[in-house]
Image (cartoon, rainbow, N blue to C red):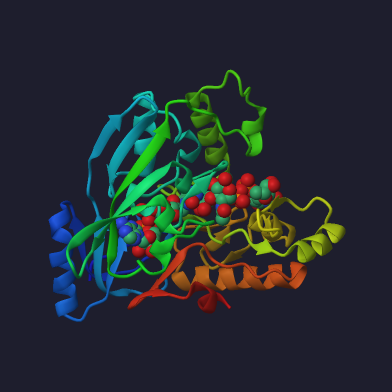
Length: 341
Ligand code: FAD
Ligand code: EPU
């Protein structure tokens, strides 16, 4: 069975029955049909930066390696049509080199362009939905591509239709981005607020985002990880008021619907878990929301650590953390909440 070590960023030793790298759209459906004919589960993967293999995968992995970027424009907008296998960060760099602004806050997010809509990637005040025009989806059983407008994608915080009705049997083969020529910098998050809104360039925002990320987040090429392991929890206004009364400095982000988002990294940090280790899995010292593989972590180490964190945070704050990372078992995705509870 081929090893998955180079197909995901947690660097956990797991295997798949077979791995097929897809470089042309017309290869997808036959590869999918061949696996189905053998009754094998199929899993789509980009760069594997948001997955944890909790078991060996007993099926076929289809790895998206479709490439190509098309650029059009009118008086008001740049339009990019980006094949799903393009690396997201390289796209951000390339767009800035072309003088196209608007992707700079999303610099250094690992993974493929085709994975970006799946969890509606977001960072430093911008989400994929803010730059998305459309998403092209291949129906593997029908071997037909259809287009979803941004409104049809059901984008929310780390959420989209690609985690629901299009989670199985569908591939994001390309994304369409729409970027305004009348560029407005987004400086609402963290240290970006120190930049001068009237003079700042997109390149300066890109540089600041890269610097902050490099200071906090481990480079998967050196240390196995999958970014934020948990989602930031959203609580009711009432629960937030109780927490704030006890912890006046608690970071919080009010949501449009009256709910309040909390910072999971702060909760884990306050629970005293930075640097906490089980086997080869450890809570990252610079950012407690990230779990790292110190070298020889097994998936059980990571699962046990995640379980411990969830229990400790719930005991202290009565808030249950839910994984952002997608857990993959022998037959495909498994419910991550169940695995760590
Ligand atoms: P994969 O891990 O390969 O796949 C993720 C999921 O999408 C899987 O369920 C997979 O089956 C599915 N999938 C993959 N490709 C397709 C496709 N073409 N069609 C349909 N389904 C598909 N995320 C953020 O939102 N913001 C951040 O700031 C951020 N920072 C990170 C920092 C680090 C150091 C790391 C390691 C991760 C970070 N992440 C962040 C998470 C990750 O980068 C994103 O989720 C990214 O979009 C995953 O891309 P990928 O190609 O690696 O997806
Ligand atoms: N904090 C601590 N201790 C920690 C970590 C964080 O006190 O160990 C505090 C920070 O001081 C800050 C707050 O918690 O007040 C939030 O921290 P940070 O700004 O680092 O962001 P985050 O909420 O931990 C989220 C995303 C990241 C994204 C950043 C920047 C989620 C789950 N994570 O992290 O996305 O890059 O904001 O926008 O929403 C990812 O999804 O993989 C990811 C890395």
